[in-house]
Image (cartoon, rainbow, N blue to C red; front, side):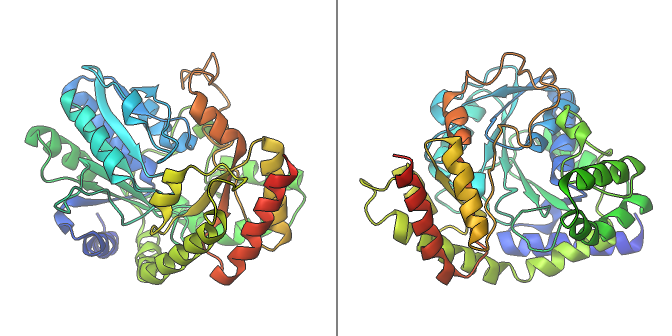
Length: 403
């Protein structure tokens, strides 16, 4: 590893260790969080011979692609309405199960449900893999404050917690993993990644300016430009077409020095970033939670409770129909803000080939995920908290108009 890359990665990982109260030696840098997941699962699968990973459909394709790219089979479990993560009551890992994924959707960390998922995984001899892509630097912990997961994946990528950072990820491997030999195999694989190519590093540096251009030209022109530059390797898309077919773009690799330095700098402002998000969440709940019994937005009571003091990436609300949800997104834009239909469709932005994902018969077998995805809107938490009440009231108006 070149000295500059090693030094920059070390700064980044030292910062992650400081933020989480963990040991620097247990952290590993990756170009993308999905790379880290792929490497972990491939190494663990080879070491154990297990073939399946329990995961969810209420997510992005890039959270499932690493499972497929590692030569494993995703087995989907419906989500809990309170945590928007795998419902522990429906998770039944067995002797084929390599890992159970605990995804902190929108940054909602439900430690009780995560503990239940860990217990289920451990009974089957499987790993608990924590997906902290939406809450970088945060981990589910037990009553003693120790991290629950065997492996924790963190993302610095597009539309995640860190503003102005588009690439990079970090992987923590628990020193308390039950099988030391398996842990050694995972750590060795993560320690052996090649460096990012100079060509891709140049594409990363151009990303911000490219997006400024793409968002200012007609949609059809923008799509054509993105596809053309992605094929040439001069544009690094957040989700590439091959990643909608069950593959992962690039072989897993390290972040460049530039990518690592961008993430490290942004982590310096994480405290104020999270404080703003907490204030926004509190402001949303001040409107939505005033009278939960009569609130026209079907926000489960447990989501209100869990979100109350958490710096969510987005504030999730659920409309009764997709049409209402799309109206809500348009209304948010009219007020000068950006809301997401995340994840609609399931496995956002939609698979181009359902076969690798095992979805040839559709998604009706996961009714909670399907219903929530149809009406979900992720409201912004990175805005001035003073602007939240007007936005929240507009959401309530739209919900009432649909009744």
